[in-house]
Structure formats: structure tokens, C-alpha cells
Amino acid sequence: MKSYLNVEDTGIEFPMAQGSFRALRNVNLKIERGEFISIIGHSGCGKSTLLNIIAGLLNATEGVVLLEDREVREPGPERAVVFQNHSLLPWLTVYENVQLAVDKVFASMKSKAERHAWTLENLALVRMEQAVDKRPNELSGGMKQRVGIARALAMEPKVLLMDEPFGALDALTRASLQEALMEIHTRLGNTVLMITHDIDEAVLLSDRIVMMTNGPAATIGDVLSVKLPRPRHRLTLAEEPAYVQARAAVLKFLYERERRPSEAAA
Amino acid sequence: MIFITCIWPTLLNTAAGVRAIPQDYLNVARVLKLGPLEVARKILLPAARPYILTGMRLSLGIAWMVIVAAEMLTGGIGIGFYVWDEWNNLNVASIIVAIVVIGLVGIGLEMVMNVLQRRFDYTAH
Image 1 (cartoon, each protein chain N blue to C red):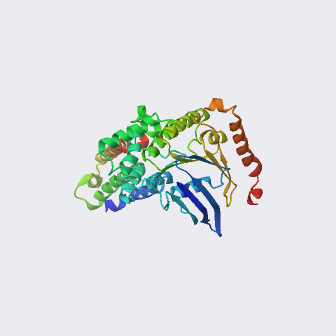
Image 2 (image 1 turned 90 degrees about the vertical axis):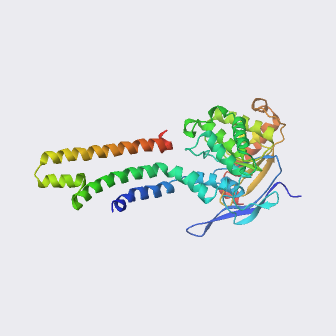
């Protein structure tokens, strides 16, 4: 049976001045509806490239990405992306940034009043209803990322793609946004694909962790299922054996198996 | 003629502004599936607006300079012709007054542009 989102034998080659550069090869991934998947790997291993292929921002040179049995060839709002650097438009207010997405996606489906309510609802979901008239440069990094998430959620995506959404934030802000994301995921049951560098974040949030080998020609090295009951709490998890095991498994993969690129090629 | 001399700063700055738009904004546009016109109106124009305004400011300065110079050549009317006329009359005091007036008008135009820039430029908020 086909899964919700299928990545089949996907690879990509970038043309270079001399020959070509192979970034990804033979990537196979099946994601079910409502799953929370993290992709982890050393920098430069093609995590973002894979996410961009699924988003449709890049076209794979081989293989195919299927979302609900339909081929992904171009970007679209059903695969909303939360970018690492939030990518809010600085000349628009918080409200207008989300409204831009809502108006575009629901232009024919919702009335103006409904779109207004939907915009506010999504901002309330990330607890930004107090700052609707602020501009992005008046907000802290964490708040900007909250708005970025609100904008993506407002598109009602089939898959929410997050490219290191909390990478640029300090540890405390990151923790509070992780909590917010878990809460939203529990409430809405979105399918989420998130890139991260943070092992704790991956274990805390995900149902499965996809570990990538080192580039060039990176692929999926291993997939770890995190069998921890939800809701998860950061404090109680720290002593949970399953959490410690999962964490150790990822650490081992990243620092033993994928330490040297020469080993990764084997 | 004045138009041809003073359009270049605006044109070059607009081009530079559009080139300087981060890829992220364009990716946002692609994910939202904005059409070419919407991209121009909602992303390119506002993102390049600070550059366009700077270009217009430079253009206005040049335009004013060229206007005065052109009046000196064509003759008949204008402050440029007045300077030329008074020079031929050996009336240096009038020339100095004219120079001060030209300067003040230049400063005035600059201030107007400054206000405009603050009004339309998102980076100045």
C-alpha cells in the first residue's frame, strides 16, 4: 500500500563547472499521515536539499516524490515551508504576512471575513495575537519564527516542511517553541517533516528520526522509531530509558558511524 | 534631455535593488504560487523600494543641476539664464544671490525626498 508521502529512489545532481556534483542518491522514505519525522545529519549532507525537493523548490534528477499519489513537480501551498530564517516580508506587519498566505490560498473558498478570522486564529495558535500590527524587525527571533509557523499552518498544508526552524534561536526560546509545536501537532495532527541539528529536539518531537549519511552522494543511513508515549514532557523524559536509548542511538550514528566521510561511502 | 541625463541613477538602483532581493522571499512567493504580476507587486516592488527611492533622490539632484546648466545655454528664462545674464552685466552680487537660491532649492528638494523616503521605506521604521 502506498503511504501518504512517498519519496522513491530520489537523487539529485547539480551541474558544476567541471562535471557534476551528486548531492543525494537512492533516497527512499515513506511518511504516513499525521507522523512527525525529523531528518538529522551533519551539515552539508543534503538535508535541506531533500526538503527542498519535497517542497518542489528543487527538481530531483532521478526518482519521484509522491504526495497522496500525485507527483510533486513544483512548490505549492499544500507543502508549506517554514524557513530557517523565518523569511517574513519586512514591509508587511505580522497580520499582513499571514494574510498574504491566507488570501492567496483561500481566495475562492472563504469570504473576506472568514479569511480575517482564519488569519487571527492562526496567529492565536502560536500566541502572537498581541503583536498583529508589529513589523518583523520589531519582534524577537523566537516571535518571528512563531509568525513563520503561523503563516505555514494557515495554508492548511498536507505536509508541513520545516528547515531547521529553531536553528537560529537560543536554547530557552527553542524549548518554548518546541513545546508550542508539540501542542499544535497534538491538536491538529499535521504531518510534519523537520530538519534539525539538535538530537534532543529530534527525540523529543519525532515519531521517527531519519538519519542521513555524510555527503557527497548522501542517502538515508538509518531510521529510528521513537516509541515514547505522547504527550511528552521534557523533564520526565530525561530519565526515561527509551529516551536515553534513542538519544544514544542517534549520537552513535552521528559520531561513530558517520564520523568520517570515507566510511560513509562504504 | 534632462530626463535622459537623470534617469540612470534610478534605473541602475532599481536593477540593483531587484537583484539584491533574498532568494527566501522568492521562495515564499513560489510556495504561495503567486503569479508574475503578484510577485512584482507584492514582493519585487516593496523589496526594491528603498533602492528605487535612493535612485530617485540622486536623479533629482542631477536633474536640478542639469536644469540650471541647460537654462544657461538655451537662455530666455530661468535661474540659469539669470546667472548668465548677470555675469554679462558684471553684477556679481546678483550672481551670489542666485547661487544661494539654487543651493536652497536643492536642499529643499532633498528634504522633500527625505520625507518621502521615510514614508515609503520599510527599513526606516
